[in-house]
Structure formats: structure tokens, C-alpha cells
Image 1: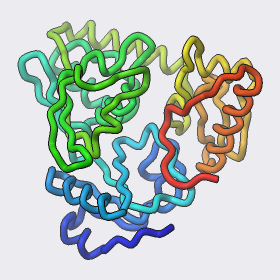
Image 2: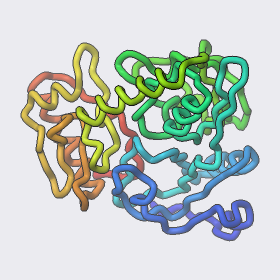
Image 3: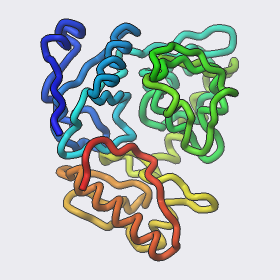
Length: 302
């Protein structure tokens, strides 16, 4: 299905912040995917409201932050991809970071180091943007972003801009109700405390060293592919089924961490998708456990 989008209207509104026929490889950490007919880079709330009006008229709109937690189809996406990169910035005030949703996690970490603020070290090495972290309640096994969020600002599907307290949203492991309630997340507040720069740096260095030794950071990937089922670790289940090293084309289950699928160079999204399905079928057959993807699947797969 192809969606008709008026290029002249898009160029009038977004000017030089609209691109046509863009390869998804340039926007995703997997470095795979087909041609995206339209990519826009909104920079204000009025443009977000315009995108909402398009979606209400049948044109799908998908927001992408760092593109680090998605698998985009080799067929592309029949709609508009909207990058959040222009919604980026951090300000500190009264014990909280006012953070725009398109801000990369490493930028937030850098800001905290520079300003000697502690409490967000756990985000070190988690790729992506703050908006993406909010949607999937990203974190480690000990701490998630929901532990430090205060207020989230978003526009809902009715076009209302809302400042929602964390307590009014449902948060679970790798899930946030904000995903359903919002069309677009614009910003949030994150709780921090005064800290010592050297201690903050050392904590982050320790986290990054642990990630480097346990995760295949040298290859394109989308991080952990599957959520951990209750009482289990997805990576351990996959390893126990003997699927480490399982390969289709240039996509392979990492030997370093079985919950990572990496692109050795020329993998396609279809290759990765086939591995995902094979892992799910194998784990289901051996353990009667359904593995749910942590990464988001964008576009058509067969």
C-alpha cells in the first residue's frame, strides 16, 4: 500500500527539513532497511500538530529518535518518518533536568559530568534518545528511567498538550503507558543530585567497561532484541538452545551476548527478522516460553 503525500505542502511547512527517498540504513543502528519516502525534522509544536493532522487523515507517522531500538522493513515505511533530533537540549533547575525528548542519552550523561550531577549514571551506554527511553522504560536490571522521571510533556491523539506526573502513568518492565497515551513526547524532567565529577566519571567508566566486555558493541545492532520473560533472562534461554552464532546472511546471533543480533556488514532487515522468528520458535518449542521483542518492528515483514 502506497500513501499519497503532497510534497509541496511538506516543503512549504518544513522547508529544508524534509527529505525524500531516504535509506533507512542511514537512520538506524542496525544499518538495514529500505527506502523511506519522506523523512521530516520537526522543530516546534505547530509542526507536531500538523503531523498529527496528517495521521488523523490516514497518513501514518512514525517518530524516530536515535533509531537504535528499531528494525525497519526492507520495504521501507508507507508513511512519514519524523526525526526528533531538533527536540534536543538539557537545562538544570532545582534538582531536576528539564530534558527535551530528542536528546541523546550520551548527551545527558555528558551534561551530568560537566555539571557534577549524579543519579543518571545507569543510562550510560544505553543507546538512543530520552523519548525512546521513556517509551520503553529503558534501564538496567537494577534501575529504569521511571525511577527518576518526574513529569512528562506530550501531545495526545486528540491534539492536547499534557504535563503528566509519573504517578499518573503505568510503568512496568520495558513498558510505559506513555506509548499508548501520546502521539509525540516533547520533554520530561529527570531527578538528579549534586555529585562528585570524579566519582561520576569512574562509575560511568565501570559501566562502559562491563558493557564492552559483555556486549558486541563493535558491530551494528539494536541492543537487546528480546525482553526478559518473568523469572528468566532472554539471552540465557537463547544460549541454552544453542543458537549463539546462528546466522542468516550477514545477520548473526552474537557469540558475546545471545540477546544481540548483529549485522556483520550486509545483513538485511529480512535476515534479522528471520532470526528473530527462529529464536522465538526454538525457545517456545524447548521451554514453552514466548519471547517478546524489545525492539520495535517498523513496516511490513512476511
